[in-house]
Length: 175
Image (cartoon, rainbow, N blue to C red; front, side):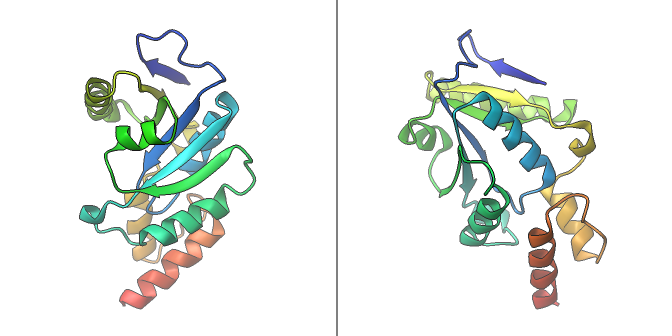
């Protein structure tokens, strides 16, 4: 399911670049599902990985970019980049006009609605499109996956093998 937060009825035109932002710490199967869906709608999708040092990510920006690039290698119209500026500025600098946001549950909507409204206020030419993941992924979040992995739980249903190994190594380093 997808819907646009826009007064522009041309929100799904195939001549637009879409940006899917997030910290992707780490990328999950839910993220991959949304990127795959967006890549069917847009000729180019830019996965914009926020530096987000205030969130104290498990992986540094370069590691998150590498893990995400490897996961998305099979999608020719997907690019993965890092950013540290205001999202709408990044979107405009990228030549994009649409921000993709994922909604896992109704509880996500209020916060996402506020973000979309703020972004539209700052950059009226940038639209927000919400995508919902497949039901199999609707409960997955990077935070939950990291917590399960930290406690030596099985996260194989939630992330790819490379991410599993990277988390295992990182948690082993931290003791």
